[in-house]
Amino acid sequence: MFLLITESLFTLSSIQLFAFGINHHTAPLDVRERVTFPENTMERALHELVGHHPIKEAAIVSTCNRTEVYCSTDQPDVAMQWLADFHQLSTQELDPYLYKLSRDQAVKHAFRVASGLDSMVLGEPQILGQLKSAVKSAEHAGTLGLLLHKLFQRTFFVAKEVRTTTEIGANSVSMAAAAARLAERIFGDIAEQRVLFVGAGEMIELCASHFAARHPQQITVANRTKERAEILAGRFNAQAITLSDLPEQLALHDIVVTCTASPLPILGKGMVERAIKVRKHRPIFIVDLAVPRDVELEVAELDDVFLYYVDDLSEIVKEGLDSRQSSVEQAEIIIDENVGDFMRWMGSRELVPTIRALRDQGERYRRHELTRANKLLVKGEDPQKVLEVLSKGLTNKFLHIPSSSLNQASADERDDLVELINRLYQLNRSQ
Image (cartoon, rainbow, N blue to C red):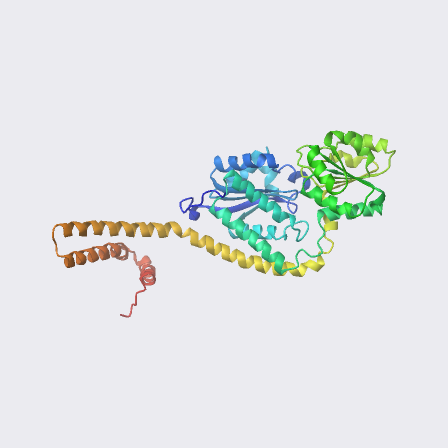
């Protein structure tokens, strides 16, 4: 269930829609992996951000290529300071890589991200599911209110429209497909190779599908819990092991693809070095798609190891890009139109407090004059005269403030005020 959304939840006129973060365009992998939010920390982070700071709503998107915070606040600097503090970084370390987007810029960015226009793989569909997971986390934490709820609902609508009316996702090369293609470039035919997958999440499942289609000699799935490894292994006629089995099993495999949510490396230099010795220096190909990385950076120094991190696959995933460029222009037009619609909705919401205050004042006038009229009726006054008093009383009250403002206006203010009153009351000055 969404957080209770009522008219009194917040005043949009004093709150700014703000998005900020880092991604593969602005920050290298060694920076991105320091600013991630594992699933087991997401709720705590959201509660801390909204509960102890001047942030009314918040949602956090954390993937291998980006960490973004969407929030409603009138103090965005506080939100950015929180991000640095949460990850025990100084603002000086983080700020050079941050993009900061407010109002329509934040809306457009969300639409572009969901549509696959801001991804390393142009048009890739996985980001939409990751955004939906971020929204579910915010809903569960109770940090999603009217503004962000409306933003993300429109975001998902725009993404669907872009994908159904353009060819933005045609001929795209996913990270999973890129890993398989890279393995083929190194080994040629991988039908004689043994493949080890470390992890059992969505990315590993996608990778396993691409590798299984090439019929390797053996597939093994290693995971922290063997039960989950067995579920994935069952789909591909594979062997299931636990992470504790890796030191003995690593040497038996030619290709390793890893993507876990571990905050610390799983494959260290020592473990890989021992595996290479057992393999008698036969090469081993490793693709690490995790952020933070699963494989220690020092592993790249070893002979007979071909190690690739997520950013290393960028050139491969650009294949087929030219055929999709024409769709980008179409997608941008759709996005710009929807940004305009959303900003008009935000503008109308900003008027709500003023309209409510105006109606409340009118209601106070009405009740005052009605009470006065009822007292006159109780005294036996002529109902016709009472109605006359009631109507005159209301008229005087409604016209007192604009009349007084006109009389008290300075010479510089008077013309603008006259024009405004003519517009408000639709006065015909020629009569």
